[in-house]
Length: 226
Image (cartoon, rainbow, N blue to C red; front, side, top):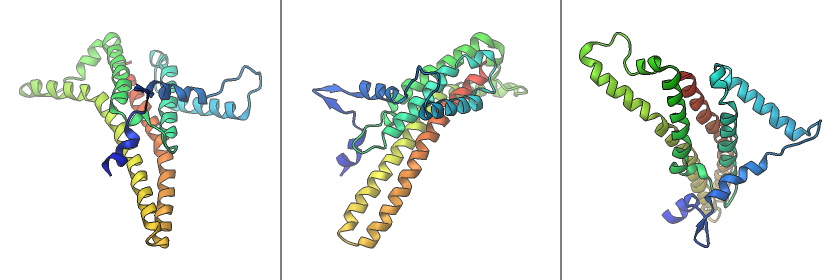
């Protein structure tokens, strides 16, 4: 039971070679590009959604922060598409791997922090010691603020991993319960199946929301450092 429950989180292999790289590159093929003067409806919808999200997310940034627009839009597209593709049957979701999420969170967080120390050194250092702190509490607060700073990328990665993994486990468990109940009680199996459909719809929303939340938090970290 444990092997079946967590089998979907194991990186697929062919001839002993992991397919994670191919799976990560696959979502980029789902976004068509057009060289025509008049785009079709799919590309127009894609551009409209990107403009809407970028306007909401990057409107708070100054000129230096807006240079990250392309990177952040690519990030939200990548996380959103990998989350959605993971909901397909017999598929693999790279964002359920904590190592991959840390690989996205740490460089982006580090880039934002380094940008802050380079452009706003005094303001960045002032975050470690709030104004008006009593003298005996200064060493403790500096340690606490330092820990809170370094825990930010870990929190980003764990939040994304936990939400996507929990949704997949619930779908797996409720789907298994539905199959088991079909031979016992058809009515109960139908009710469980309706719950499974509602949960699947919820997971589609969670997949997009988590991509937005991850990118938004990176954008807020960038805003604090530019």
